[in-house]
Length: 587
Ligand code: G6P
Image (cartoon, rainbow, N blue to C red):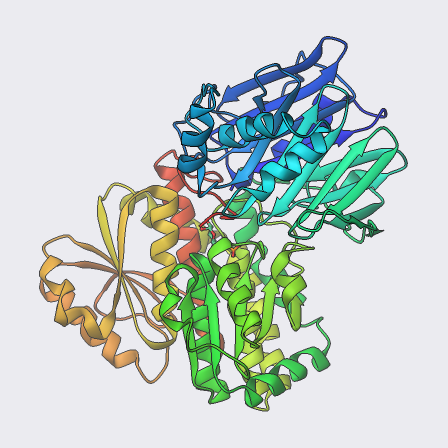
């Protein structure tokens, strides 16, 4: 949620550097943005509602900070966009997070005479810093004192009129990149990767101040200095572009075979080490949010089926009832694109404190989840730019399948199956007739207001994820129904013409799903089947290759493509759907 970027250097104009960085961070929020630069006039700020501009700004300078916003407190307006000025314009501040005690702090500050001009919780930090400046002469000391009074997960960046840039982290990520005399600040490493030779990830509870040549890292609580530890920038190909595609979403769906093959490059020893820990663990939990929550549930499914492990799937924001049950000897497995999702991190931090072990599968380098994990797997899938997650979901569940097969003593068999899956996916994704048919069906479905997706067993999380993609991309109400549960409630909704997508694998549950389809068809529903074999109940058949054990992973692709073409038919902003953000670093 929200992206922060900063640049200090003489090589580039700061507003150009910051705008480029913000454009790469806008997956974190894109309702409004702002840039502040320092020049001979003092600190100049430009703010706008909407997506970050491609045009150069009029304001220029050698030092600058910027912010792209996903509104939490206060409407989407220019006035609420960051950075926010101090009353005397001696500094500006941008923020990522939620100040949980903002109401209390504001009441105290107002009593002391501070005036508020925005609806944001961020402004509370600005006024608090001003209040602290009454006792602390140095701005960095005032920022530190103010930061200590905040509750919640917050990260801030401050630009002062003497050229000092200060950043403090407690939650949302903040990383640095440097090359010669240039220093970049950002919410992720990919945003500046092509420009830097070394990177550093700031730890929670740390503060950095950069003034001229001086770079100081400090422990906020203790007030002691910390030696900055830069590492060589190992990110290759941080470049982000759509290539020949109109949208990142389609490009990324089509990268599925690549992301599956990337998993096969991971040394066997890493899969074996995790499998051994899973077998030894007292309890095994999988955890994620949103799409990663569906992936976590699918991973748990695979662990039960192929690993004979009693794995329990948790949703990040809904795990509090497990807090007192998680402890030493347990293992938590977290798939996460960003590795920074706040509600998942909260559970992992608690679990770690209580002595549990953590395994993660993450795509974004340098993330908090990777850093806190005992078993660290990287998806190595390349940047996923579309806010709707597609290729990473595929990577997460394929990884979970392989981990489960390893637990079951069949790593090599699992690898062979994934390799065959990648080949089948590749052929499928290149088949022009397949794409044409999907587009036609999606065009029809895009005219509906409601649709239903049926599936069972290995496809249960897949239909849920299909539902999520359709809702996110086309804003059409979709509803995933476990095929067996249909007759218990959702059958009341079936009537003449109701659109239903049924996902039917060639497995032992196939007949149960076909029976459910009979029941909806009898009530007039029009069923499109995603299946290796045709059935008389389908009005349209979307044929998929039968990849046996990995059939569920294969079925994800037509669902993602349907969601893509539906969003396209509706004329929506496909890569940036309304109201959502890719990385949710606030609770
Ligand atoms: C947001 C995104 C989802 C994503 C979820 C978890 O809600 O919109 O696409 O699945 O966060 O993100 P993570 O980075 O942990 O995979």
